[in-house]
Length: 211
Image 1: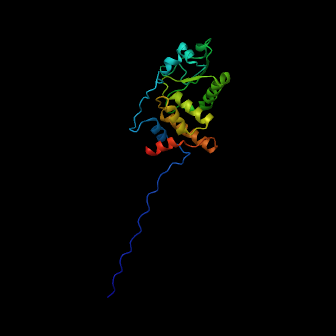
Image 2 (image 1 turned 180 degrees about the horizontal axis):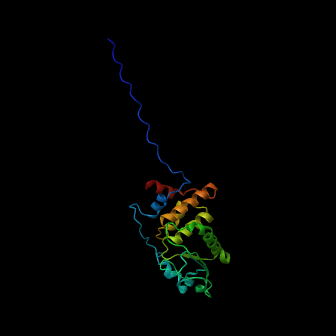
Image 3 (image 1 turned 90 degrees about the vertical axis):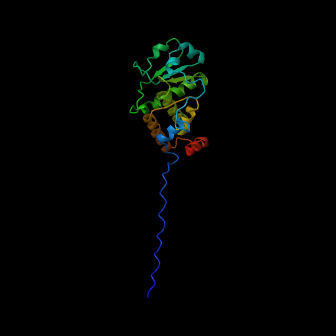
């Protein structure tokens, strides 16, 4: 009588493939994680920078006291969600004005103004042998203006989007809408392909891993 041979053991199934994000690929989720705390909430920093942008942007005495030489209004317009200032408003103050008529909506293509905004900020800071001071604002300083500043840091200082977002967030509470964050991700991808970005700073990379 033949002995039945033991059943062959099946090899264990391969582990599921890990979904990894390349170092030069940035996602909206990653940027949102940098903007919120460990609980997923957005909290105000303790610094005094969280003033309403509209108030400061229209207060000539305050701007002059701060030594502001240039203004970039990223919410130019006369609706409730915009700030109704222009070059005439600052005439005679010594402040150079530039306006961007942007809407704070995810579908608004703010990226068409990234180069324009970065160019104005760069020239403003170079004013008077590097003594220029530029105030970039929108209505609340929460979405439009920080997006322009982040794009400037990426375009002119070669910062990865995650580093640029973290840098601005350390100064004040910001929360660009997901459409703007997606446009920053696309800019990051473009600059990375062109070799125009520096690496991710270790502190930012560590925070991304712990989320």
